Length: 527
Image (tube, rainbow, N blue to C red; front, top):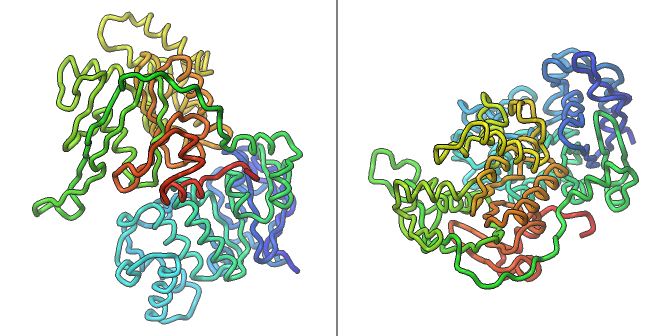
């Protein structure tokens, strides 16, 4: 059988340096091949080279790509005819792939208008049928909606529907679920693999997560620094990796840590009592606002030195609750107690003392670090209050904190000169330099590669045990909390639906929603 895609000694160069080096692989009809590796390994560049969409600065530097036995033409007109009915591509972030100024129906019909002779009515009917197939309700009316009116998971379903309308023989999925919570991730991947099987489409899956490979790929090719490190059938490769780099990727998948000894009873450090946070519903600008409860009558106590994992899918209210417990968003009702004192409506010196004792680590360090400040000044900034500490002392403490998080000697750099994992370490250093009593880590590792995620989790765990701060670890992934949490609290629809000690929730979950989160979590192969 002729492979759908053959990549023969492909090399890609950037500024005279090869970022992909003599890569070889093939994909048979109906087969799913995963290209695996960390950021910078060359996997996305390989996928874009196949479809002729390399960004400026990157160019092929040798080798050949063949589609259904014929070398891919270098001219853009031939590639445009092939894109769609021959090769389709689903990108990582659908909001950047969908045009925000055009309705969904117009964008879906575009490929059918270019590559088929269907009438406008037939194109519309095909779009409605495909939207229904990917689980979009009220599909006929949703054709008139704009991309911003859908959730991230729905937008990715729409992208997949648009691509599969033309029934491509090869589907390239470049990190298609990285920005999604675990439940939505599982739904989108199940849908993608199901559609590929229905149409006999070969699938090239680009990912950094071996958990996805274990669940969805027939074969895997592991890349590092632009080279193929190891390849073969997915299950044997993951169960018995030969190369050290592959073993490191497998080991980076979450595993349960040893439970810490039960702490003696103590008064809560921080406690939410019947806390609610509400927002006006969409479309209420010119009429009396109908309110939506993002957090609905939630009570949660966190004790000194305790790590509580707050888990739930997108829209469950977990991030809003975390921010409400820091008073970064205002609650509509309920109480917030810190060391027994009511902080709900405090202002002035009492509120300042509370804020100085609490810190937050955000999901994306690149957007939370000032790009104009050097790393040392970023870490030292929380020491400006209360006033009185000399600049030299602030820098000394910042440098000591950077040493603790493994960034000694990098204080003079700007954030753009650091990797994603290093920037997250800077964010952690900034949060801990004041020795806070309470830290909220809001999806602090969800944007990181698996191996970097493991390092940052280990750093957080080590710093928490050394410094003894209480931590609310907000995440959508129950697999991640195995390594760090003492207790797990599960949110759905703005309410707490389950809570308990880590092992009890993971081993004997009481709620169906918790069981669904556990089933969607990506674990070590064979676990």
